[in-house]
Length: 328
Image (cartoon, rainbow, N blue to C red; front, side, top):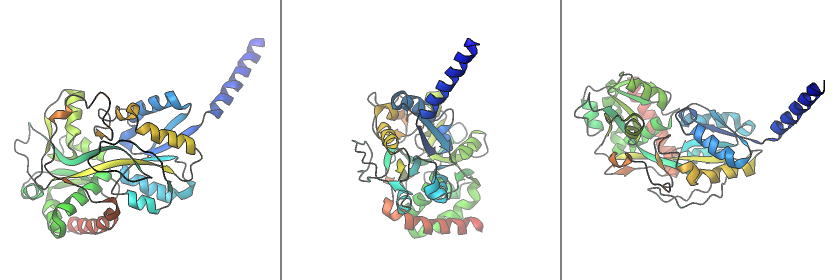
């Protein structure tokens, strides 16, 4: 009987302790929370210091994150959103749902960072990835790709940040010629997926010759699989840059914990996880440098990036051109 009473009392105390543990909810994209993504390691490292329960919620791909936050509005359960990029930050800021971070850091980004709300955590260049054993001579640009019979998989710009990045890549490189580029590319496109994970999986299963991904994607195969058959094709037009960011919700019930997480994002504990889990360049180079293998990646001769304040207007025009070309 005494044992039963003691056990019951212990359970009550354990329940109280659990109930008192603060929870930080972070909405992010699906690949971030996958078993092979950064999520598990980030959760373990942050929880070791925060005295909290960090809960990631996968919400599709990057662009779908913003749509979900706008739909949920002030009722959202998210304290932090992680996975937007500079093509979306102006639109996100206009919602009034995000709060300034106050985070300052010595970033190793290719551009100066002045935004006081959105905190960058990694960056990279979009590229078409191919298998060197199956494609000896990759196209050197969009026009060469369109003139070939190569099959590609891309992502939907309405739900995916890579898909949106591709739209702005073509628009930034070709301007008024962009509709013609899309019309010429339309018969190369096997399918348009909602997110990056589905597209890359199709490529690995041999359903396409090339997939829209990043110049850093081959590092995964080289480092994690000791496979040097995958490469990114350098395009003469240059490559569009992506800078991924996170931000705190203005209505969070855990403002101090959210700030602590954003500060953790720019620490070595977070940044050292990024290169071999998210397979991107970290926003701040880790103390031990980049892993061996990153030095083999292509470096674009020209980088493209539409300023955040102009991406909104350019996105609408580029999306209309893309939809028109693919509907023919």
